[in-house]
Length: 97
Length: 481
Image (cartoon, rainbow over all chains, first blue to last red; front, side):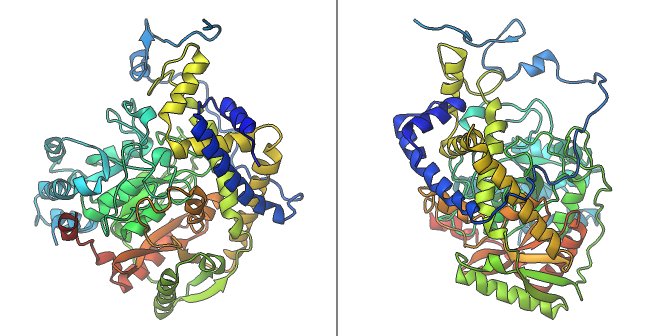
């Protein structure tokens, strides 16, 4: 059974601020889903290789040649806060009163 | 029958014979919008009707046949909300590759359709802007997540539509709305410009009134795209008129998808389906895919894991909604907490958990192994069968609010469609019957790149049955509520 502390830990990893009510709800619902997922313990899969992808392709690269793309104006067009061609965010460090 | 009730290929033929002025179709669809959209709520954004009419060009027949686009596929200059508060004011700065391809044929977009937030859900109830309703019974859900696209095609406010399918999000709403939906082979349709949910599972595909329209629209959107690193550089599907000859083909009826949890009325429809195929000269045999019953737990580990990673980009920095916060981290956490709805948060929490230290092997890695087992089951049976069949959904369209309180119950109803995404296969859903005037969908599954064969089998069934000609009794919508 997932504890509230674990829920708060996941919430922090996901950068997802929850209310106390949401924490309790997700704790119960995640437990339901994880208990159901325990069905996967029915079969021994120690010799089965994991399948990350259905396609037999990997490392698809292109030549490093610049091509036409967004202008700075277009890239900033949906920015919540912008100044002098930059995205503006609150301070990374500090902010304590 | 009005023009909005016809299929694209029927309308194109009328236009080419000059029996119809091209603007008439658009006007008929706009008329449907005016009459029914306030009840159905298929769209999140509708283009100015004048503009849609004026976009019809004499020398471009597809401009006469309005298309609806799911609101997680970018159309330059139009809003793209993914039905989420976090993207409420987002304007797409570029076109998805599928839109570029449609633009080459001067396709005329009617609007952007409603979905479960970020395509997570099976009922379109998880939209931050309110649910879409099923045109066959507005007390019921249209399915999801492409519920808006399926409903718009069913009521005729668009002639055809694009959706996206990660675990059934094209096929299940097509089934619930009595229309046709194709989830193509993974890698055949570019995902560039589709807002990512679970990148190893997502595919864009058509939602149409019949199989011919489906094949036609698929032929326009499929093909290699260097902007999508998972796009396959293979010969694309090219449309040619369907014949529907299915004599002698071998069809496997998936035993596990007709067991517990399947509505007996849906089962009865499947019995009729088998009989129809046999009458057409196909050989139908029951077949077992032993690991398919593990699909739901496998999917509900893998898809949320990928989603939790993909949705990390919505942090209030570069686009979308931003909440306040004293530090960048606080701002991001608040933005995500306030901007995402309950189902999206649930999946981010679940996905973050199964990827976190100490649980990765027990959940995520284990699910990847089951993915392999499920894909192997399909590979093995396709040595003996041309196609496989199952119901698209084990249950009939359910009432709004009936399942929102119990996410696990909603997840379990995805059992028939999920395994196909896990294995990367193509599958089509077509109408195969009605129960109390509610549509039932048949899912036909093929090996990779077998779209041409799927269309033939689906077309053979369609032409032998009356279901694709049935339209919802729209009069009931205005009188009923």
